[in-house]
Image 1 (cartoon, helix red, strand yellow):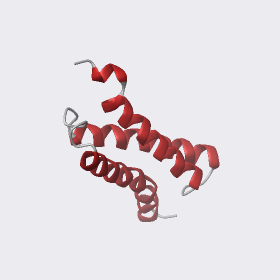
Image 2 (cartoon, one colour):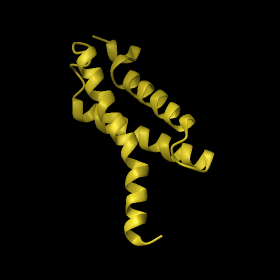
Image 3 (cartoon, helix red, strand yellow):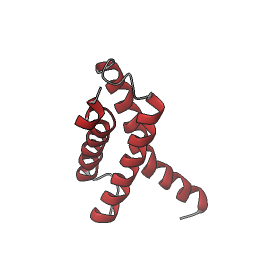
Image 4 (cartoon, helix red, strand yellow):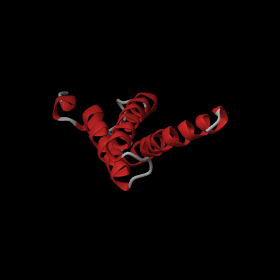
Length: 95
């Protein structure tokens, strides 16, 4: 595998979690406009992207190949937990 193929391989490995985090952020900010008003879109997107990348790499390490449905399931659950921790957790409602 030459260098350009290696770059494209890494881009294709890391692009789905980042794209999923951006879509997740946009949908959440649209659906829960008032509840997520205190959390900026950039903060939510960056934390979601980081957590989705970690879930993607962990799924890759666990299954041994990229694109496994189990890995995508991990990413969805990780995004939901991250959004809950940043915006909907009980300690965030003090006020």
